[in-house]
Structure formats: structure tokens, C-alpha cells
Amino acid sequence: MLDIFIIKCYFTSMAKNILYYFGLITQVGLTIIFTLLIALFIGRYLDEKFGLNGIFTIFFIFIGIGAGFFSVYKQIIDKYDKR
Image (tube, rainbow, N blue to C red; front, top):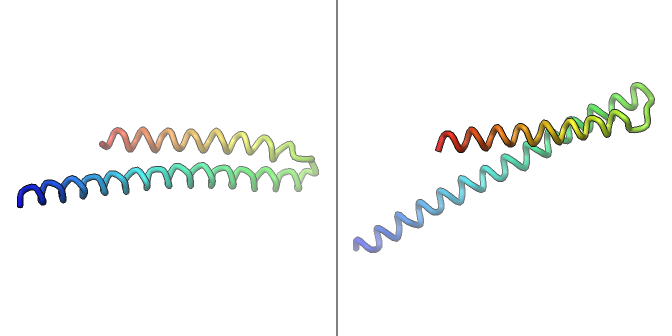
């Protein structure tokens, strides 16, 4: 009976870890995608407004990538500190 309880506790703990890391990976992916998309739309809007051929779009894509990775870094550091 005790063996079944130990196995059940082990798999419950493992399932919690799997869900935790799946949530973290999902959060990281969505953060990068949304910051990149927001930056892309801002760059395209400014290109259309000022009549430039992709200068702002390229600039804001790099800004979005940097902001996305910085946000992901902060999220991971915060999650690591809480554990």
C-alpha cells in the first residue's frame, strides 16, 4: 500500500513539474511573438506615414527582438528566484 502511495506522489510531482515548464515555455514563446508583432506593426505604420521603404520596419523588428528577449530574461529570472 505504501509503494502505491509513493508512486502516486512521484507522478503527481512530476506532472506538476511538466505543467510548470510547459507554462513557462508557452509564456516565453508568446512574449517573443507579441513583442515582435507589436514592433512590426509600429514600424510598418511609421514607414507608411513617412513614405520610407522599410527603414522603420527593420529598425523596429530589431527593437522588438531585443525587447522580447529582455522580457523573457526578466521572466525567467523572476521564476527562478521564486523557486
